[in-house]
Length: 281
Image 1 (tube, one colour):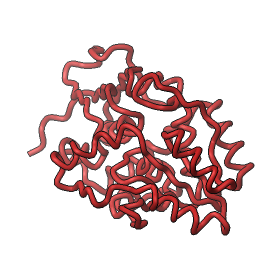
Image 2: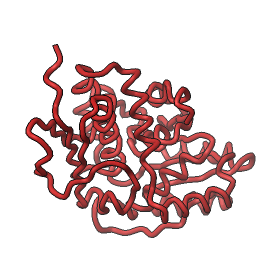
Image 3: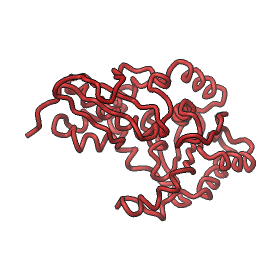
Image 4: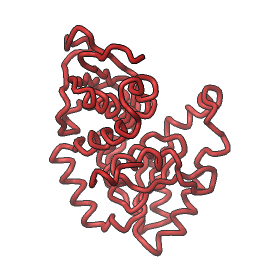
């Protein structure tokens, strides 16, 4: 039997990176919408994501100013930055069915829009570079490398042999660069410079690199690159990267990833996109 329906849902977004926050947020928002109860977001600007929610997005979400905001007497409070599928399995399945939940998630994603300044930068770059015909590639190659030993020990799903290799990305670029535009989004300045030297026609969005905090680039530029990847005809990303996968799910773009040196279609992203077409997105 389902537990008592809460009066409201509060998601505390802190200590996780951008994609991890967003993938959980839309899950809890979808459940609140389907239960017709308020959804509240407390978003911390910290080393993992140094930007306020309103500096990045235009959204109907109610943002509160305190992690302990009083938003009702029977409030379900959540903090983990998990995939919305996990949100449903651990909390939402007792209230709503999966197909209905997944459709509502995509409605929430549709309502999640960058602020006008960010959107303008995305639109101008995408139009000038003909991204509708492009292959979008996301290479995560900084702090995630240090996490691989942890995932080997902690996750039964993680396979060290599937870790994306730079050779795999180089091969992919070489196979495509002559036939269509190729956009690369990466958090590693050295990787970007080396690939641009090897493939001068490679497209990159100009962004500053920094050393402060967990990210190597500003959060606003992360949103820009997520959106630009979503403007491409398909995305190939990095194994075990939520940024790669979320970029595809947010925009509904076919997604594969480099596993070892091979490009492999992602069954997970395919499942997360089921039913999206019925919304007319």
